[in-house]
Amino acid sequence: RKEVEQDPGPFNVPEGATVAFNCTYSNSASQSFFWYRQDCRKEPKLLMSVYSSGNEDGRFTAQLNRASQYISLLIRDSKLSDSATYLCVAPLSGGYNKLIFGAGTRLAVHP
Amino acid sequence: EAEVAQSPRYKITEKSQAVAFWCDPISGHATLYWYRQILGQGPELLVQFQDESVVDDSQLPKDRFSAERLKGVDSTLKIQPAELGDSAMYLCASSSHRGNEQFFGPGTRLTVL
Image 1 (cartoon, each protein chain N blue to C red):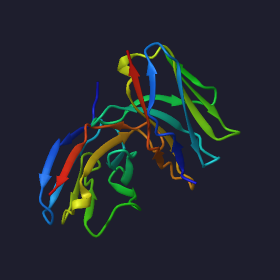
Image 2: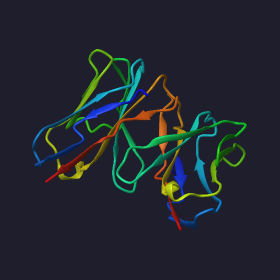
Image 3: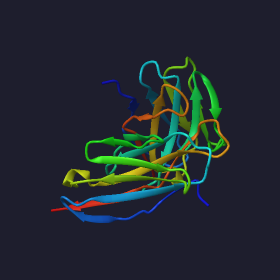
Image 4: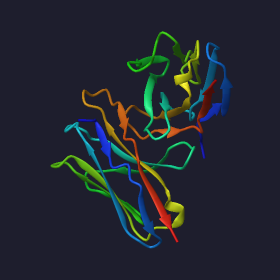
């Protein structure tokens, strides 16, 4: 099993739709999780951290499900500008705080 | 807003040549990372520094890649000799502590001909 797994997509949704991505991780002791957004041929940019209690920032909500070992990202009222690849990040098994990036989920929002 | 600086932004070289990339992290960030990202994949960690010390280089192809951060501030990643398979985006990131959120520079896109 990969350390971090994501559905590559693409998710094609119309403007205004709600879309959710999941990301599974293998290190049950993981504490730190993040979602990054990456535009085509650009660097990843931190979207939000994922806390045990969840995290909400405007139209974006991140949740952590420890029992099933996955994190989720919910985007409400999708905008054209949300089109990007969303990378999930979790700590590597074995410690030393090494973070592992998933391969990303591609989102395409259309008019 | 503080940013991670990288140069060059683009590099085209022929195989067997040497290339070097430079990174200046956000001021005060002790942890610096070099990643390689191939199109369609997530960033893969090559080397991680804590101040001037390497704390993880398990995925660094040490026969051709080297990295240093002599004064614990900026860093250089070198490839010698470059191979066709090295074509990728090379990203530098920094964080205030290991395990904390990382902030990325704009990357160096390397093409090896």
